[in-house]
Length: 214
Image 1 (cartoon, one colour):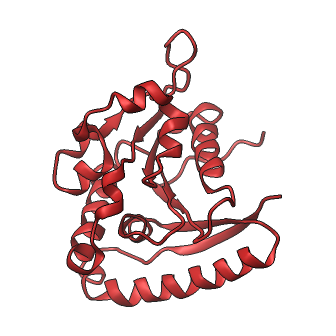
Image 2 (cartoon, rainbow, N blue to C red):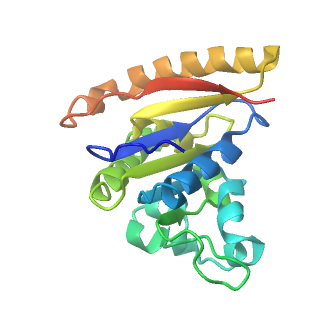
Image 3 (cartoon, helix red, strand yellow):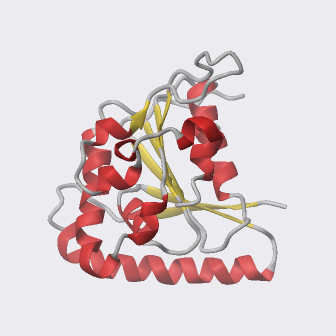
């Protein structure tokens, strides 16, 4: 595999499509794992889907169920110390030994389903951006696995990202979902512009590419 250059600064990438079953989680966790394992990059995978499939992939069912509420993304977004939610070197092998040293995780939970955009949208965006900014000296890559239903947590992840990758299937429903994604991004940019412009150096994320999955 061709070597990739070390990034000049941290990069934050959201995997987004407002349609299920298009490979968002599969792509997000494999990109995160590849960056960490094959290229020795420091990566933080942030699971923004209440279904927690990315968290399950990294932790397994037993370890995921054993996490305290303070070790979940919702706690970090609600003001708890976000360092408490970071699971270090999260992937283990069958002997419970570290398999991917530089891949860390902030796990999802059901409480992400109940965050309210109307009353807390600005707060959630700024908190997610704060988490990313505070940890930029620690991680070269932030990978956000977003849910397919435009929840506030996904909006906050998009806001805190530099770029967006949109996985989709080569069929009409996915094309429609991509059109909806474009409309939702324009809406989010309008809704956040009043406070985004006060963040030094902030730029709204760009769609970097579409990945077709069969």
